[in-house]
Image 1 (tube, helix red, strand yellow):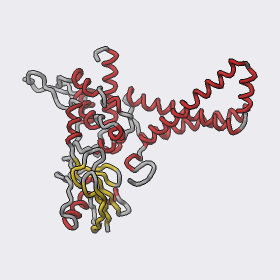
Image 2 (cartoon, one colour):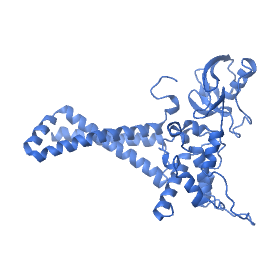
Image 3 (cartoon, one colour):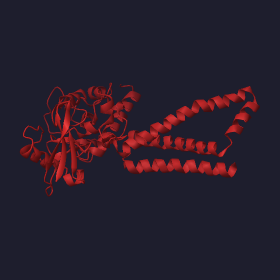
Length: 236
Length: 120
C-alpha cells in the first residue's frame, strides 16, 4: 500500500492521510488521481499533458518540488510514504493548486517577452546554431514554466521581491536573441533593479531541481556579467 | 514541517557551499578584531605582547589556530568557486566543487598543524 499525506485546505489547512494500492510504474500524479477518484472527490490539483510538456502538475513531493507526471513513486517514496503539498512560495488556492499569477507577473517585470521593434522584420532572421548567442539561448529555451525552480529557490523565500530563476532565465534567453530589440537597454534595466539578478546567492537549488535540466544559475550569472560589462562601459 | 534543522527542500550541495562560505566568513570576521587588539598590545611595549603570546602557546590554541587557517582556506576556495561561476561561466558539479573546497581547507589546516607541531 502507498500512504499519502495530502495538504487539504487553502493557506490554512492540514495534511490528510489516504491509502491506495501501489502499482507498477506508478507516477506521483497517477497516485493523486487515484486518490481523487476513489477517496477524495473534492481534492483539487492541476495537470494537463501528463508527459512533461505543460508544466502544470508541479507540487512539493516529500518536501522537494517536482513535476509529478514524470516522477515515479518508487523514486520519490521508496518507503511507500508520500507527503504532498502545494508548491512553496506561491499563494495556495485550494489543496494542491497554487496561484501562478505572481510568478508570471515577475516574468513580465523581468521583461521576459520578445520585442520585435517598431517595424516587423521583412525577412526571416538567419541565426546560425553555432553562434555563442544562439547556444546560450538554446540552453534555457526549453523552460515549461512549471515553477519548480521558484519553489526551490531559497532567495525567493527570503525576498518576495526577487524575480526568481525562471523569469531571469527567460530574460537571459532574450538577451541572447539577436532578433530582439530590447536586449541591452530595457531588459538589462529590468533585471538589475531591486530583486534582480544580483540578488541570486548561487545556491544552485534551481539548477539542481529543474526537471528540464536547465541551469538558471548560469543564466543569472550571465545576466550579472552583462550588467557588469554595461556598468564598466558606462552604459548603465 | 519535518522538524529537522535543514528541511529536505534545502538539502543540496549548493546550500552546503553557501553555508560553508558564510560560516567560515563569520569566523574570520570574529577573529579579525581580536587579532588587531592583540597586535595593538605591541604599541604599549613588547612585554605586553609577549605575555599574551605566551598564553597562546599551548596545544589547544595551536589546534584552534589550525581551525582558523582552515576557515581562511575554506572561505578563499568557496569565494573562488563563486567568482569562477559568475565571471568565467564555470560549469561545475556542485558536490565535487564543495568536496574540493573542503579538501583544500583540510589540507592547509593540517599543514599548519603539522608545521606548528614541528616548529613549536
